Length: 261
Image 1 (spheres, rainbow, N blue to C red):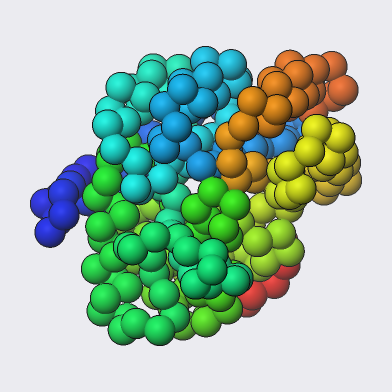
Image 2 (cartoon, rainbow, N blue to C red; image 1 turned 135 degrees about the vertical axis):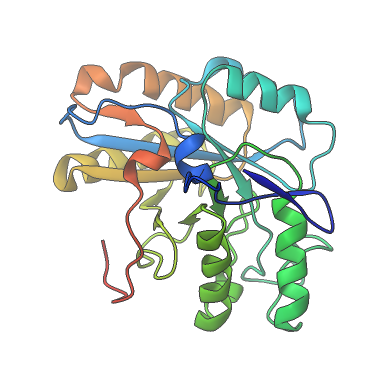
């Protein structure tokens, strides 16, 4: 499931056709017909204490997105895998407000060549292994400027597809990815990051799931307040008739029509 890359091991589809997004997926009972709610927690790896707390306190059905800039995360990744949590790579894509909002010196940018962006994508994908896909967000930055260039975003998705990876678009209201298995988030639950706002957004997320059958939330930056609210919410979700699911349960096939989900 791996091949040698210029910066480290890169995921690939196995000789038997197995894909990383299936091999590393968390099992789920597809006969469970309750409204399905997924949650991706990003901004992980840079603060080891908060990352460890998230792994320890949150249900294993929460999906974790790690920054490619994080170092010395092998133990944290092992603990997350040990709990059966699905992992994503956070991709540093050019956001609104760039360069004041900077996604780092390895970011994929609108003003550099496609070849250089491809090289930077390979770098990000080689930072660690055992993940099901990537999300186009780095913490609270959600890559809006990069995603606005359809050809660049399409090329990124095609690369992920060739490697057997899914793509999560962190922009609420975005279309289902056209060139890769995946989906777009419905709600950013920590924007703004206050306690009352987080609780309200989680309620909105549940409402979408009850209405449509599925919903996906994204939280961009792990904080003590966020972890408290997520743990309390997740612990009582099933009592309200919904079920928390890993992100691979919600992913859809590529949608070349560009239609909303």
